[in-house]
Amino acid sequence: MNAREVHAHKVHTCEVHANEIQTREVHTHEMHTYKVHAHETHACEMHAYEGFCEDLARQNTAAHLSQLQLGFRRCRILVMLSHMGFSHRCGVLKVSI
Image (cartoon, helix red, strand yellow):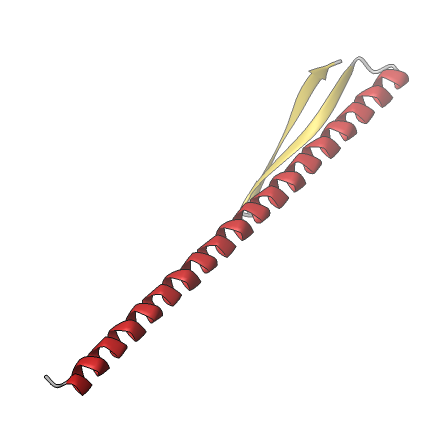
């Protein structure tokens, strides 16, 4: 192997190494971006769910207070269940206030 071939081999080795490092850096950056996005999405979904629960609790409280003001001691809640739109069943839940 002459000096020119040795030099060409060293240059090629350095280029391959540099390419591998760049590939790892890009992969690391992409994974970090993915993890940050996943975390932000989860936080947003949890915030929306908590807001839904708070709204539902407020509606329930308002409904119970209205029923108390009207003098109801029991309320009946109609529950409808459907299975793929083919059959419907109704039930009544009794709740003491």
